[in-house]
Figure 1 (cartoon, rainbow, N blue to C red):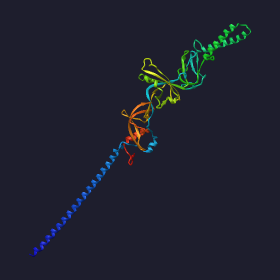
Figure 2: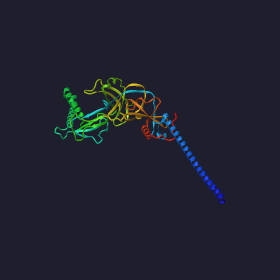
Figure 3: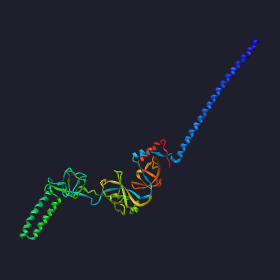
Figure 4: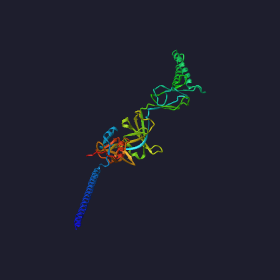
Length: 405
């Protein structure tokens, strides 16, 4: 009985110990669950904040700046970027065509052979493009070793004989030893021989061919040792001061020819566009019908040659016709082309740019009329266009850039 009384408290101690341990384990489990819920709640808050941040970025694009191109101010200054503020201005309707440049009438001469003979150029300075002065000897023609003999030598002999006869007759007629009629016949023979000798330009050793005017040797058509006939072209001499622009206009523009006032042109070897107004140019005439067997009507201008244009060159011609008021015009250099569409780049602020599609009208080679896509006050990039295009392809907007209007 004593044994049983002692056993009961021991069982209670065991149960109490188990109860305490169970409570401790349950408390730890609850704390862990609470920490997990708090962590998940924190993740949810961060995720919500991130979505809110993305939403704000979307709003920036919705404001219309998602396609903005960024080019730093320092980079724009380094490439010399320039812009043009669009405003209505005067332009012209344009007739595009092709044409050629040639020397103006009276500005070019062809030197021909006064006699038949073998060519001997006057020196090494006689080459294409050489400058010569009037009266200088270009070449000599000699026929000394030919069966017919040298015309210059024959002319020299005839001249000397006629001169001596004339001098003798001049003394005899004073003393009335010969009649006046005889004297006049001798004087006539002398003048004929003198003119023939001077025309040949001989000195007894060949005929000298002289420059008829000062200018530049355009084409030398013969070489040393060539035999030429009398009247055969030897070379072309040009003063190279005035040029003629001959435009070949398609017949469909015939009714517009009376409205043509001036023209621009561009050569195949140079991107520069030349204006007749800047070259003292003027319209000479336009055809009243097409060329024989052709489909074009000629229009001829005359202009100063400033040394940058080669006579004989083929050119692109832009005939300026009816005036157009209040036109929106940009330089050709402002345009870019992609798959048949044309674009310009607008400057929005100090570092912001935008690509803008435009519809083109007439062009005079230097400028082009814009029919749609631009408005008065727009600032169009005219120099540095391709650098802006490269910046557009990068597709990156620098951090911290803000576009405010």
